[in-house]
Amino acid sequence: MEKLRVAVLISGRGSNLQALIDACAEEGFPARIVVVISNTENAMGLERAERAGIPTKVIQHQEFADRAEFDAALERTIQNYDANFICLAGFMRLLTSGFVDSWHDRLINIHPSLLPSFRGLDTHARALAAGVRFSGCSVHFVRSEVDAGPIIVQAAVPVHPDDTPDTLAARVLTAEHRCYPLALRWIADGRVTVEGDVVRVAGARVPKKNLVNPGEH
Ligand code: GRF
Image 1 (cartoon, rainbow, N blue to C red):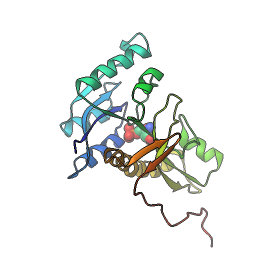
Image 2: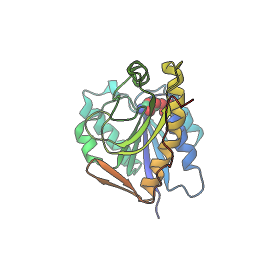
Image 3: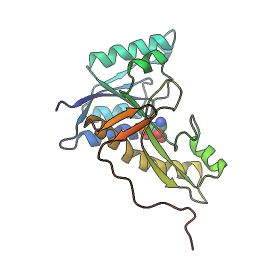
Image 4: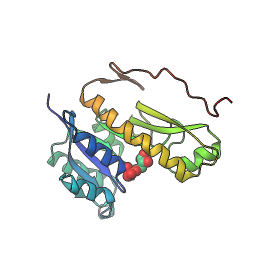
């Protein structure tokens, strides 16, 4: 089977990009990253891509009159590299609904909360302020509403009583690096179907254990 040809869109650190790069380097992984696009020129993720020998492209949003023109430039680059799938990995620009609709079910994102809770920014501070006992991450298909769309995989992590937004972010990030490659692999293997808001992953197992936090003793 032909590998999925993935464009990864970033704005910063690129640790999720790195997780995808590492996964794609594994023997038999069904996807490959054909281009990494950043809307800022100093995104650390660009260096990660270069180190891995992946083409990079900077498309600075300030250089465009509006979102539609920026998205048109994105589209041209994605087409130039013949990508047929997009992963958003810490990409901090809102995409137009025209762009999002044209990549329906071929565009995924990772968000550092258990969606639909805590859409948007500052998720960890808001999760702590809300007193939730678990937080986590979600990989989901992108729809035009921000941080919404059918959920492919989630990981739950316990919130510790002494957590700060940073310590919680670090725990969630470890889970993100597991989840994003999993979701991409399942999609590229053709195991994922979307039925309305619900995603089915053929052959996926459900964990046997429930988590309780605080634990009992
Ligand atoms: C991650 O927490 C991701 O969930 C969110 O932005 C952050 C990007 O981090 N969308 P990195 O650039 O992948 O390290």
